[in-house]
Amino acid sequence: MTRPEGEREIIARIRRTAGNCRDLVVGIGDDCAVYKTALNLVSLVTTDTMVEGVHFDLAWHPPVALGRKAASVNISDIAAMGGLPRFALLSLALTPACESRWREAFLAGFLAVLSEHGVVLIGGDTVQSGHEIVLSVTVLGEMAEAELLTRKTARPGDVVLVSGFLGEAAAGLALCRMGLAQEAVWHPLVSAHLDPVPQVALGRVLATSGLVHAMQDLSDGLATDLAHICAESGVGAVVTAEKIPLSPLLCRAAETCGQSPLDWALAGGEDYQLLFTAGEQQLAGLVAMVSKELGCELYPVGRLVEGRGVFLEEAGQGREISYQGYEHFR
Image: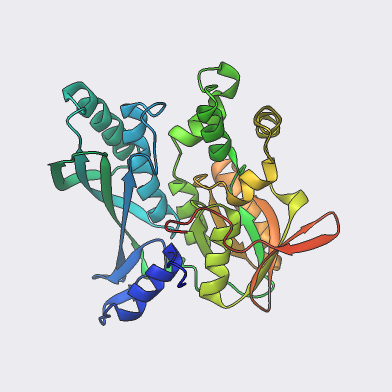
C-alpha cells in the first residue's frame, strides 16, 4: 500500500516542476518569494491560508482576534527575511453565519495589525463558502537585496538562536481546548495563541546588522523549523534542551494540562518568534546590539554541525527530532 504524500513531499514535488526567471532571487522553499526590483531593492511576497477547523476554532477565536492573527502570521513571514512589509491582499470565503457584525469585527482586527506595521490593504476577493470559513492573505514587502536573510546560508559552527519564549501558543491552544481560556492567570498564553506578534522590528535589526547568516520565523515548532534551515543549508543541528527558553507560566500550564512544556516548545508551533543563526565570534556583539536598540533578549539554544538532521541533547542523551511539528496531510 502506497503511503500518502505529506505536506513537505507535495511542496517538494511542486518545487521541482515550477518555473524560474532571471529576476527571481528566492522561489519556493523559504518564508517568502523574492524578486529583484530597481535600485538594488528586492520585493518579498508571501501568502498563507487559514481554514476553519484546521487553523482556528470559532468556539474561542473571536472575529477581532482572528482578523489580527490572519494579518500577523503573514507579516511574520516578511519579518523572517528581515524585510519591511508594505501591502496586503485579503481573500475571504465566508459562510452565511458570518453576519455583518462578525465581518466588521474581523476587518477591524485585520486592519489594526496592518496599521501597526504601516501596511496598506490594496485588494482581494470575497466569496461565499458553504461550510467552513477560509481566509487567504498575501503580503508584499521590500528590502535591500544585500540585507536579505534566507534559510540557505547557515554554516556549520553557527550558534542557533531564538528571539523569545517558545511553546506559549501551543499552551494557549491547549488551555482553550480545556475551557480555561477565560481564567485571567492564563491570559498571556491564550493571547500568544489568539493574537501573535510578528517580530518586524527585530527582523530589520538582524538583517541590517550583517551578523546573521540564516533566519526564518517559528510557525511549526523549533524541531520542524530548524530542520527547514538545515535542509536548505545542507547542515545538521544539535539543540540543548536546558537552553530552550520556557517561561514559568508555561511550565505551570503544562502541569495543569498534563503536558510536557518541552514538547510544546519543540513541536507546538505558532510562536512566530524568529529563529536564526550567527557565527560564535559575532554572538556577543549581536546580543549587545539587540539589547541596546530594542531591549530584547536573545536565546542561544544550540549549534549547527556537519551532517544532516536536528538532534536534541537532554540529560546526557541524544535523539533526532527533525520535523516533529504539525504537517498537513501527515
